[in-house]
Image 1 (cartoon, one colour):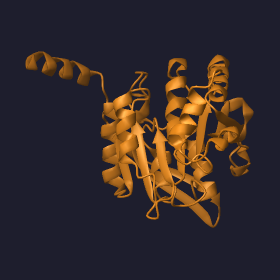
Image 2 (cartoon, rainbow, N blue to C red):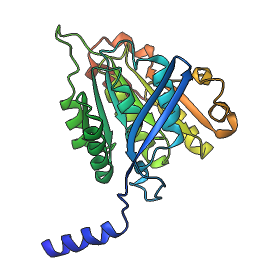
Image 3 (cartoon, one colour):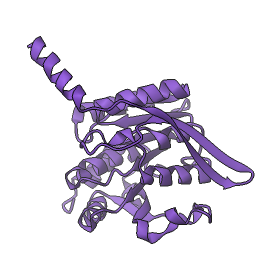
Length: 272
């Protein structure tokens, strides 16, 4: 009933913190280039499964350093950018400074509301906020329908997928990689995915590697040499931070440029 729904909402609100404040993130590359980005976020984390996106995690800082070091997020600034599991959206909003259009997504309704607030706060007109729960067919299809994968001449536009600390829950690895593959397959020769994360369980990392290979994705570790020399805390291997590049395995390019044919060849092969 309506009364029960109101009671449930009131009970939920007791445990949700929305005390957001503006935090400034500074990225000093050198004396001639210091980038700052403001963002609304919480000062401390919640451990709730669907509310971890209310703060900015170290892996997101790492991914943001990489985007800024490249001054682009793909082969060209015309690439479509999609951030998965964005949380506060730091990487996605930074990417929007170098990209024509950016889609920032998350699976939590609470975090989506925060992303809308950040979009309004930053006046990011080239950013679209969209709810996306990996593996939920209706939401994946809604995102795919919203994106213009063709340019004005009818050519395929490259896609750059971003994800920070999205390799966390073993039960979500397959849904995450399937979503990545669906996006990259639209322009497989020049699309790419960058995933940064802090390794917390070697078993989850092993599952991620094995599942990516089975799904026709090539995975390469990106050197952290792009980090400034005075950022030893990020460079140190003891932090367990990694940045990976995922691309569609070139073995499947012989299937042509039809993304549906390519997806069938990958997902329906005997070893998949």
